[in-house]
Image (cartoon, rainbow, N blue to C red; front, side, top):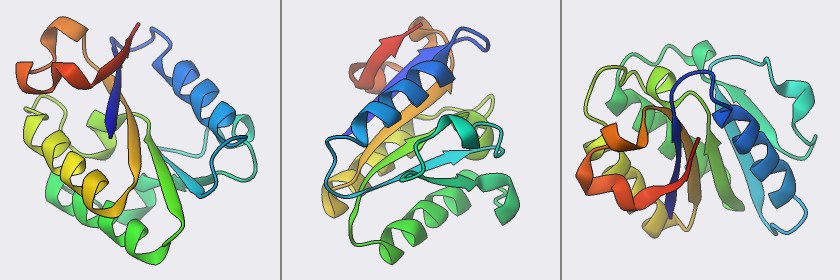
Length: 139
């Protein structure tokens, strides 16, 4: 499952994402990974959640980003959920169509049984039609 939290920059998407991930740690049996563009939110996350600062890994395009995600999944067979903050920035899709990448993440989710919750700096009306059904929260 791939769920989107959408809204323009500064509307509170990260707060929604942090609240959701911290609530999930109480009920999830597997592991949770939180990807972000920095370690700024490290102290806002439960210590059972693995925070990865994507900027440390020299990712230059969306394909490299997907490979990075698959690498994380391959190393943690207990991984159940991934939270992706600042998705457009960490995946290098700012100003690009995100449809193909989200659809690939859906396939990854189905194959490896990992749920994705993603914050996207975009108005709900601007989300491509093919993935509008993935919107969980619009702020």
